[in-house]
Image 1 (cartoon, rainbow, N blue to C red):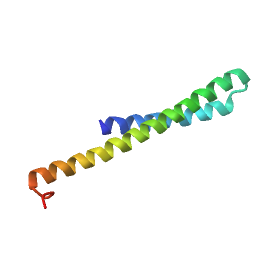
Image 2 (cartoon, helix red, strand yellow; image 1 turned 60 degrees about the vertical axis):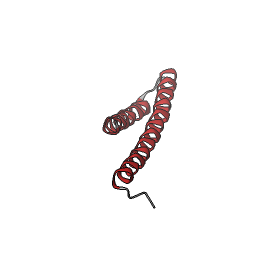
Image 3 (cartoon, rainbow, N blue to C red; image 1 turned 180 degrees about the vertical axis):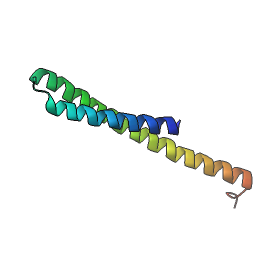
Image 4 (cartoon, rainbow, N blue to C red; image 1 turned 30 degrees about the horizontal axis):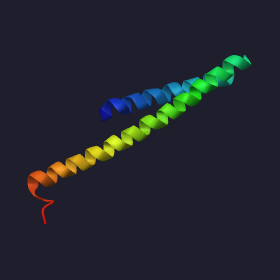
Length: 77
């Protein structure tokens, strides 16, 4: 899941940059406001995905450590 999430984050980052560039070239005020709102929503979505990735990464490391300790007895005093 982490690999898919990493790929998704990279793709969204690329699309976000494209939308930001496009927003800078729009002259119609109404359309520009809509596009800027979409860009802001995507920024928030991107931040949420990054937080989710960090949580999964941390939990994965803790789970791996737990399994290692359980099978090797390393965590037993």
